[in-house]
Length: 250
Image 1 (tube, rainbow, N blue to C red):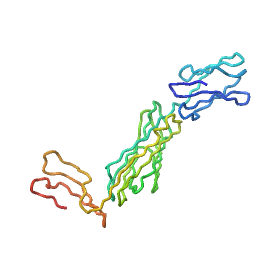
Image 2 (image 1 turned 180 degrees about the vertical axis):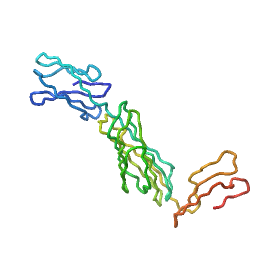
Image 3 (image 1 turned 135 degrees about the horizontal axis):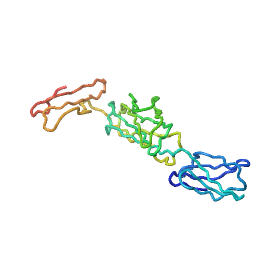
Image 4 (image 1 turned 180 degrees about the horizontal axis):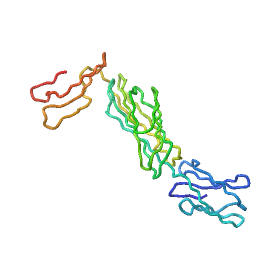
């Protein structure tokens, strides 16, 4: 057996009929990466060593010495991460999720796919990938990213609406895979915990501040009324309600 530390690969022999097969495995998960058939070997191969780069050398029981090149693609190191906003999310109101797939390996990786299980108590309203295609149903989606260059990333924006009526803690789970074996699978799965709080009163809730500045007497806000019996949106913009002694009205 030989070990290539720079590429994190293990190499070893297995007999195939009258020939020998050299096999390359990922050093962490031991997944098979590639094979090479070596012919015209006299005796049993032994003393397999890594000579640097993609070269291996060994000797045989018949006093042969072989130096072979074993070029295979760099191992993948794809990572999935995610964030959400706001925290907590409010029942009957929208929140957003951003899922990001990143290739941490120096070389490009093909066949990147993210499988996402959507959180309970939430409705998927829309999605927008920075690249690739998405198919979705009520509980999950599959994002086919395609290839990512070394150090490259792609993102998927999800627009959600909370459907909870009580305090809930839910999870969005995203898992990434690729066509190339990944020797570090521990970062292929991301779980994002999302706190959902009930929306029980009809007071306006400010969901975003579009524009304002320190010391200003005006602000531009967007609000949404809890739709206990209706789903109407109310926009509260450019009010002078911050002026002392005055109030904005909906």
